[in-house]
Length: 109
Image (cartoon, rainbow, N blue to C red; front, side, top):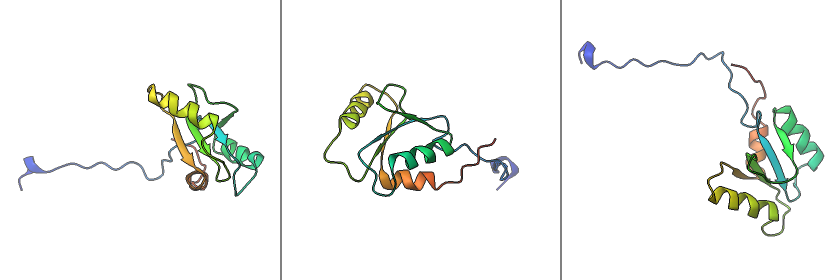
């Protein structure tokens, strides 16, 4: 391999932290959570830098589906409808929400 064939690889600074996935994001819950109350979940979202919404709108980033839901909720239907129109909304099940809130909440950059 000649010098012309070499590839330079740059690594990001390991001391640099990335914002939490919920940082500055609008979150909506639908259905009861099996692991915590809605109030506790709201505190977790706020601790990650996120904002709680009561209804799904074009500004919604995440819809969290609680494990104790029955069927498809109006909020989930609205999110799916907006997604069909090209809105960037992610629907997460409760287990995925729990995994995301377990990520360290340091926000830096």
